[in-house]
Length: 349
Image 1 (cartoon, helix red, strand yellow):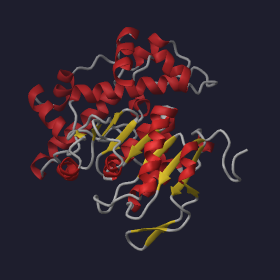
Image 2 (image 1 turned 90 degrees about the horizontal axis):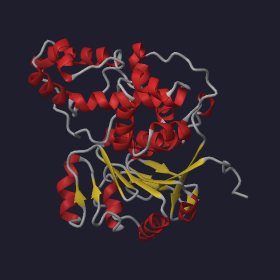
Image 3 (image 1 turned 60 degrees about the vertical axis):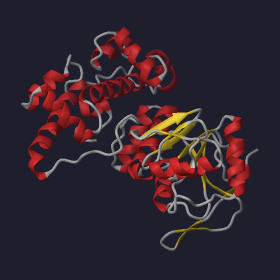
Image 4 (image 1 turned 135 degrees about the vertical axis):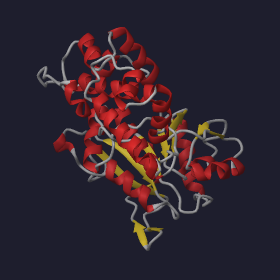
């Protein structure tokens, strides 16, 4: 029997708390896993605030966080998330560092948002592993923890079941990605819609996006229209040249402006949207796999299978077996409404 108030069969998430953690990251973690959305089809989550003892944890702005479990609860967690820090060199309590080492040794997934990578580095969990943090903190992480392989250009990355994320918004991206990875794209999209945020940004995008200057606003508007155009026509054999022509640009100029605005290349963005559309169709319909491939714009089941293997480390059939929600009818989920099929806003970055 579990403790009173603990949910049976819920996915258990531990928010690790100690003095110095960022209130924003605590809010993000709580919003993603601490809100009951089961009435909208999302899985049941059990979020616990875990600390060395059950005393209020001070945060900046005269805020406090009240833990409801001690570190012993980490042995029950499916996922452990460490918020970022207000002072990135804050030393985590020794019991916290010891508990994180034990949890990783047990095989529990561990994730850190923004400067939370410093906490993992203090625990030695990033030694010899790839990690990311906010772009302003990359040199600091390298200087204080030279054993860590710091990756400069990513929103979030994983190494040996340890996830790290870049700055503020990237922490949201990582949390939604972890939901997507464990519970499917539809669950992540439902949570994202509730948070009014884009549900699909890949970890491989650049952290720092070169925002357009006022002189480039017209190009920015054109590119937003191109993305909407593409999302509504994912089932067509679109190429980068097609998108450039729609924007009224040369291919080279289009690719340069697109990457500066979105942090990713047109080809990678288009592939990401096709994968997201295929995930939705696999989850929400009983359409045959070749038809899913056609509607998502892959052209063939073989091509879709290759991209699923390289990007998701699974096959379309295995993905459907894990995340299908159908007892739904084989509804006509048309890629003509591509923004829904892809699970993201047409102009989301």
